[in-house]
Length: 375
Image (cartoon, rainbow, N blue to C red; front, side, top):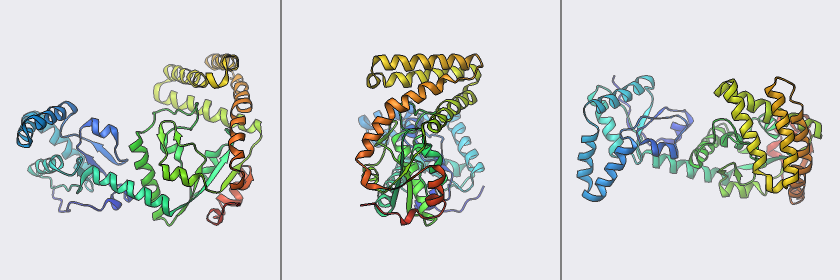
């Protein structure tokens, strides 16, 4: 294979064009944070990396390099080199990177060349890519405008949000719905992964000329993912579109998203029996997480209804009891909290309406960018 492409520091293009990336860091490094189009095929596994780190501290650079050559030799080296060659064959437009674009990526590049593959690397490695994204994220937050989509739990804010071409789905990026019941199948990304994906999302939308974005009203934490403080501060002063729906509609939306969809996703991933078991466990754990705030009596009442509903589902019956605890929880727990919060935001509300009204007047008409705070 002949590849005459030079090494690159065009980080913007890498992310805009979804260029495949060969991440040769150790798995422990990759798991802490990575990029969406990266594949981990390490030069050193976690144990080898730890041994070399210890050697470096005790005996210095040259001894650590020598140990590395001893640990990754013979069949081990051949196997790893073959996995890199296969990556280059599958992704001829890709690039290699390690943490700083130093010895590991250069070594992989050299071994590939010995195998007949000339493949470029990313100057500065992961650290340079990560810093570029962080700088871009902060610059974008400073330069862009944000409109907030607010509304009580169950109004279907995410459904409406995703109908707008100018939206950023923070909950989607965090893989969490933002409440005690918000955990989703697959778990959440790391904080670094969340920030990377947010920056890349902004980059791609801004490249299309979009600079006013619709965001769902969020607290500073979406599950365990924390919003950048500068973004949260700007959201807290942004104009609000307030989505309103009646309780019956909200109960139905909540049932569809938190019961039907969650169960479907669990079964798709784990199979019928295990999927239902995991779904049931998480639902009961969710109500238990807010036991103190509900109070013991109310918690036990809602939990008992939930258990009845799960039994209905398991027996193949219509799980109507789910809607009973959902209605009670919305009306008596979530609504009072949101109404209190909303009192502090009244001067920022620029329009109210249901799904259809807000979609037609603002989201589908291109009128978002013209909105300004009511004060």
